[in-house]
Image 1: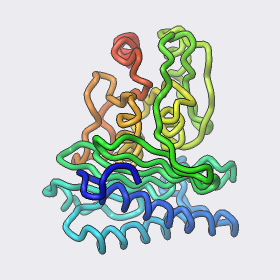
Image 2: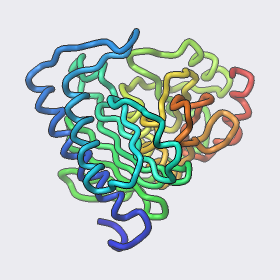
Image 3: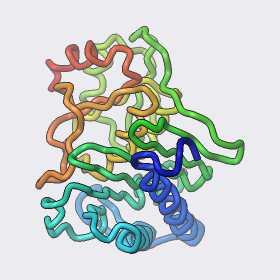
Length: 274
């Protein structure tokens, strides 16, 4: 583990990593057995894997941090969290559609937001066993069979060489406008939001733009702190950090994640697309 055990948010980082791993094992068990799919809404599937992993994480949070609020995708939101300074945001299975399609592009995400900002979190990729974790001021780290290594975003600065990540299952009709506005030539598809952001944190891609209104706080908490600690940037289209513990859990504006090299310019060029 990087840093000292009593460093700010170190305990929360360790917990997020451990509980994400265990939830990932739950998800993998269902992945091997096959699942029944239900639909919460159009294009919004849920499975037994989502529900069991969600229940496990929420249970462990209650034991370890009983005074903290929890906002989990598969749990009812009673809004009591709004009076708390600390909020855990949980996506027990980010990329359920990819899970159902059995393409491996799904992750477990657990993060803590304090006073409205992401401060610690973890992303676990069950099919590869790769864990990504970060805490404010502690850097971003990857753990897998080859060991532990620090994460850094790419140092690519030429926009025409930027690698843009787009959704595999629902490519936004505005992506062509993004590519035109920024002069981009390279587009790569990827499954879940968390997996896209993980690729950015590892330096395997350079830019992700999300215009849709469906992104929730639990989709962004862990990726937010991970990318910032890896040296990149995650902001809304106006350049503000992503806010957490809002009454409406949907992100209030389109957001952009990048390696940070041309972030302000990217935002300016995308302003006209909206």
